[in-house]
Image (cartoon, rainbow, N blue to C red):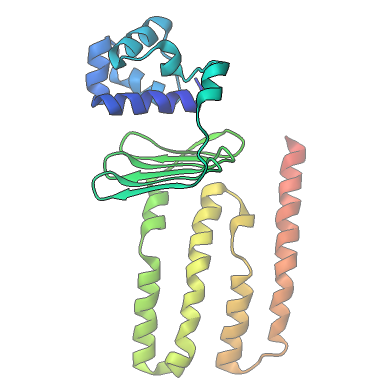
Length: 246
């Protein structure tokens, strides 16, 4: 079963107001089976599909997202971006290019880009689908580090350093903000297992500014910037070696 069908089964269940346990009990399967269907790890057999369609009051084609050529022609294409924001329903943004963002307390976070990249995060599912159509589970640790208020921590350190007046106070404390893009790029690089996601240029920039401000040795500290093209050459070389091995 593909991701789109699995997500459709999930949405129909939620629309009907069933939990996975309740749905499993109604159609006579285990909760684990329902969970696997909605994670695209298994497919319900024909009998179960018929029961699901009857339970939700839709046809089998509607349940599976199958449309005839006439249906496809009749479906209107949005002529402009649609935005709906409310405290009850959450935030829903559907662009005319096909991008969709749906965020709510009940439904969680669902993002679909026109490039077929998808992110789904709620109590039942935590995964994203890349542009190649490959599914990747999102680990809880990733969200812990991603949503940790790192900018707030850096701002607190900045204020503490500035008010203390040590090591130049305000005139040098701003360098701490260079840690913010570096921090988030490290998280993304680890998640994607791709060093090219790392904001490496920030590192030599921080070294150059730091050494320059504290020692006034601007020259030849500038040489650290030569590590930027070197870094990306090495990363691309590693990627090519891995690609050739496959």
